[in-house]
Length: 99
Image (cartoon, rainbow, N blue to C red):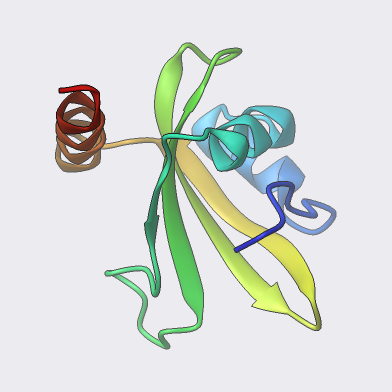
């Protein structure tokens, strides 16, 4: 995944209303140099989406961001505040890299 900004044209309003996450916060998490990338998303039914766990400074939190790579574009599908499992994995990975 080389692009760190997703197109939220179709799902931006959804993530704002459903999860109180803005597209810019989701893109901050995508751009986090310490992000975790699960390719494919471990909960994906089709195997077509990727899950990125990254930190958003604006949200002040670790976010889970679901994206779809299609026609050389990165499309934002969903984003929410990361659950305990994803937060723990993010922190453990980043703690080990600093040692």
